[in-house]
Image (cartoon, rainbow over all chains, first blue to last red; front, side, top):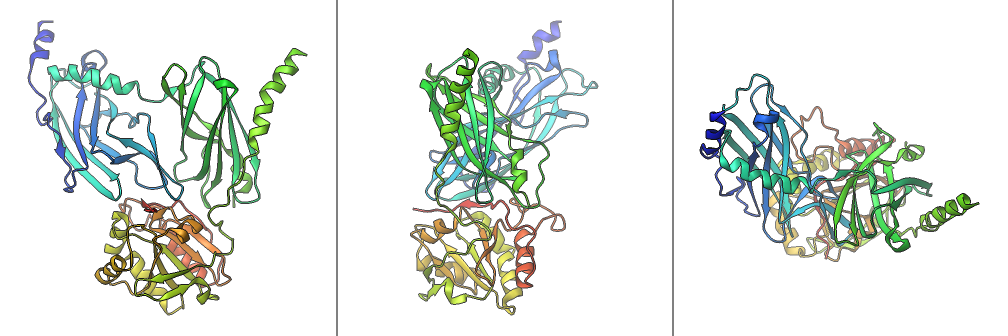
Length: 289
Length: 198
């Protein structure tokens, strides 16, 4: 019990220096640093391990679906044996559009990307945890610059900065897309076109809010071509639609009738909320070669 | 009766807005490749129609783009162009970067030892006509003048796959086109930097 009180007083996470370091390719459009939140390590045997990216003004890095160009940001951790890593978590992205009908999805200014890590049963509280992160990204403004960084570090549980980082992680946790509950209902209609694309319309009926704006981020992987996305708010914000065209790339197969996507709703209260929204796209198979 | 009223109320907005205006846009695979005339980095005027009857490759490029730089380091395009040159394949690079002209493209051709023309499309007109979104973005026009392939070089944007595991969509399609065979994978997701239109 007394050890528990002493533990928070222990010192800094070695190697996780507070200063951001430049990436190893020499460009300084993006700075990265590793951050950990170990506040749940003793209670839950889990901790959050992330990379904070800070971009210079005008530069952006990419979401898991980068859109028309760029590359998804990649974070990989090497941890001791039997540590379980969750998937990389992506806060709500933004859209960057440019001339030529090119839309990218990603982040500017700063973003925290992280994974939830579970320590094995064999882990003894108070033991240090060595970790190596391999981070790579593409940052673009007028030109694009690839970046990569290998960060070797040791996490020492019980340091006070771990508690401070909990607020940081909690703040970014709020920016993850939520699972939809009662906020709205939706259904998808499709219509064949003359060409290879199928037209889709997602009809949204908002229940607990009035929408002023929508943003939609498809996540089709390499399987589907998605284009000509448009949105509509109708009925004074109580309903709306997302329209898009999609086709299956030749030789690709659908592993599910649905495509993942993220819907961001801006409401009359000034809130911006993002939801995970699977969209039924199985009708693309009618035109598949 | 009330139920039917509600159903109609919900349905009408859906019906009205599903009628979307289809903007004319990039070429579909199978369509006739739009003709164009551009000046290359040496000052020659080049039209697509000059090459009717040949297999033509259009390679959207930008020397400032790390994806293009990697492919030129790995000689992806250079080797394919050389391989099929004797089969009469016409290889045209197109640069729609708004801030580059003949000089920048000449420098690129010189440094990378590019033997084929780089067409200067600074206005972006031809790029937008074809729907070129990335550099690189590859198009193959068959002997009938139709777009037979459009998309990425392969499925390895990071350049980290084992070549034996990589799908070389463009190279495979080019081989098919030269032999007059059907192209199985006639389009794929292009990857690269965004084309830097005006």
